Image (cartoon, rainbow, N blue to C red; front, side, top):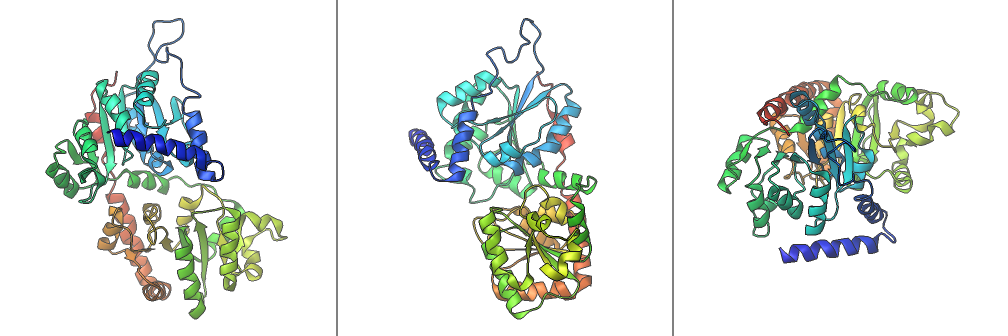
Amino acid sequence: MILYTIAIRCFGLLMRFSALWNLRARKLSQGQDLAWANLPTAENNETPGSNTKKPPLVWIHCASLGEFEMAKPIVSALEDTHPGIRILFSFFSPSGYQNATLSEHHFKAYLPLDTKKNAKKWIAHWQPSLAIFIKYDFWFNLINETLGKQIPIHALGVALRPDHFLFTFFGTPWLKLIRKFQSVGVINQAMVTLGQTYGLNNSFVFGDPKFNRTVQRLETIQLLPKVFLNWISSDNILILGSCWPAEINLLKQYLKIHKLPLGWKILIAPHDIQTDHCREIVNSLQVLKPILLSNQNDHQYTDLSDASNEFGNCVILDSMGTLAECYRHSKIAFVGGAFGKGLHNIIEAAVFGMPILFGPNHSKFPEAQQSIDAGFGFSISNQTAFNEMLNRLFFDPNLVAHCAEISKKFSISQQADISKFCKSIPEIV
């Protein structure tokens, strides 16, 4: 693991250097500074001046905000079956740490760079009684130190594939560590079989906790600004969720030869919500006369539905935190990312019932193929396929309704059996 140690240290130096001009690197660097800023004292598991120990601490590592959302129903079930525990969420990504909203008896902290020294210091300070890794982000030294202290580890929501890093030559050291976990909860039986082929005899079918969190949203309505709610509820909505320039360009080319059908509007939620990028989208889709949601207060209109004739049938959602709720009011979703490195969250859309379009690069996301097999997911690889599929959906309400019914039922059926897992864990001390 000498090369790994060198790589981690080089990454740390490069991060610090890049922070001089790169905003993401700067946030990562600031996160590392905060990793040790708010740690408890050496008596962190004891009440000062008392021999009474504090309740046991469960450490849950989430790579980013998406994994944090997956962890929420797991934490809720853990607290039901093991009352009185404390919860520590760790993040490496600033977007996860900064946007994670915590409940009472919950803590959050940045995960330090994965060196042996940092791993020892981390475990010594927090002294967790149990560790859970959500989906992936397996840091070698932290895991090795945790196992060395006889702290049980579980990994949940893991998606195994034949080309998974763990099954490569370079992934062998990690695979040996994960074989020592108490359990590895994978998404389906095929993954259990695959894992056992590589010696992961501790794997079991847990399911996908992303579905649990999204199903919870069916019963929890997030309030949207009234002016925006009136607009989004007045017609059929095609939503581009977490989209990138590739998805925007497909829509742009479609609109060069097709008019937006009567009774339809478009809501664009870019993955990058920086002002310059959002204004580029406005400029590229002038045929729709889009407006930025954040700018609507600059106009004299009190209701976007009043403003639609003046500003067109397209709104750009240039803020974070409301995309999932916007899917509730949509009829068709085109989810971004799969023309690049990987697909964004389609389950947020699926749970509200709708056909979902996405690009071709989705092999690392089992829910994409599941949606295709179920009949409500459609992988689009080029402009022609996009135009044809969008026209089918625009002009066939029966197809849209059929996909919506399948999508919603599918999402509910795919929830992980979290309660069963939590009940299987011995008393946490």
